[in-house]
Amino acid sequence: MKYVKLLLLGLLIASTLLSDVNAQKDKTKTKNKSKSKNKVKPTEPATLERPALQKAEACSATKCKLPDCRCSDATLPRPKFKGKEKEIPQFVSITFDDAINVVNSAQYELLFEDLKNPDGCDATGTFFLSHEYTDYERVNSLYNAGHEIALHSVTHGDGTEYWRSADVKTIEMEFSDQLQILEAFANVPRESVHGMRLPFLQISGNNTYEAIKSLGLTYDSSWPTQQFKNPAMWPYTLDYLSVQDCQIGPCPTAALPGVWVAPMVTWTDMEGYSCSMIDACAYPPEDKVDALFEWMLENFNRHYMGNRAPFGMYLHAAWFSRGRNYFAAFKKFINHLSTYPDVYMTSVSRMLEYVRKPVLGQPFKSCEPKRQAECHAVQCSVQKKSSKETRYMNVCNKCPAVYPWLNNPLGQDM
Ligand SMILES: *[C@@H]1O[C@H](CO)[C@@H](O)[C@H](O)[C@H]1NC(C)=O
Ligand SMILES: *[C@@H]1O[C@H](CO)[C@@H](O)[C@H](O)[C@H]1NC(C)=O
Ligand SMILES: [Zn+2]
Image 1 (cartoon, rainbow, N blue to C red):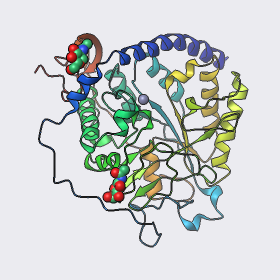
Image 2: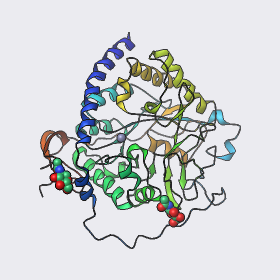
Image 3: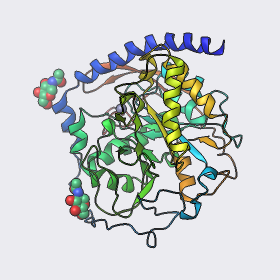
Image 4: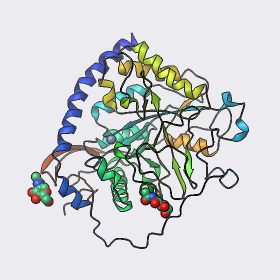
């Protein structure tokens, strides 16, 4: 009965969502490329004094120690956990990318409703948020529900080339402006934001990670691995050279101490192809709850029966509208996960807290503190300067004068 209800709801939202996604796609196409490029140009003179990066050396366990350094080739949280794999808590990172709106936030709330981890704490996920079409009142509410709000840029870019060639300054601007937007319009404190995922998973070598460091963030989760899925790769730092396979280059080769990579360990689809995100799997099983469920379980078991490296469930809400049973199957699967005594569905940043100080058995002494970021919600209708289009946005506090954008994150009348 419960699933029938879910299914109906899923279908209902799916149809709304589909039109929403298409609308977004069209809008992106009409964006003026040359104009937005101009806007990205730094207004101040280029910072020439950025220190040169050192080439990363091969990692060795004697030099690189927890909690702040971890070699990419370490297959267990601690070497002494060998033989005790079954006692390592299995983390599951459920993440969604792109804008949060009224429709998909309702799905997110349904997914996590009453979902608990074995320690009694709420199961949570991570939202890699992009700015355009985002409803900041909903962001505030997901944040208060304990989810991690992470960065996916202000503009989402014009395509992969923008990100592939992005210099440190561009990345800093995209993500520091987004931090300001989150603070001003969703009351999400800057200190609560720890990570990012690049649009199209398109990193730009050292630059991405240099920007992460300078912005005071902790991690990136944009780098897929196909080679290290069994045993699966654990998160690691870039103090030393990464052994991870570079699927979408350029990948970093400089030493960037303290920056964490939460690798996107790929799934395997029904034809044996690897997919970095669930919705990137070209050959999913047929559109039936049990078939989808079994497929998810198979991918999960590679981690759970193996070295217990964090299991990623990475997707976009649009995936739920690919098939009539997708939402129900996903919900059934995560409900199933919540019955395990040793599976923890947490945000990426909470999982990294564990990786820094790993133990056997229960991973944390207490739940994360409850959040109470207030939101006095207002509905705004503002103009997007570059296209003269009207954008409706729900925000906390007060309406901006114009639609917030790169170089004008607070939407001031300039
Ligand atoms: C796009 O940008 C170019 C160059 O800045 C400009 O000449 C053109 O008028 C712009 N088009 C639109 C639709 O804004
Ligand atoms: C990254 O930095 C290292 C060390 O300075 C350098 O050798 C390498 O070419 C850089 N990679 C890219 C893609 O810029
Ligand atoms: Zn995206």
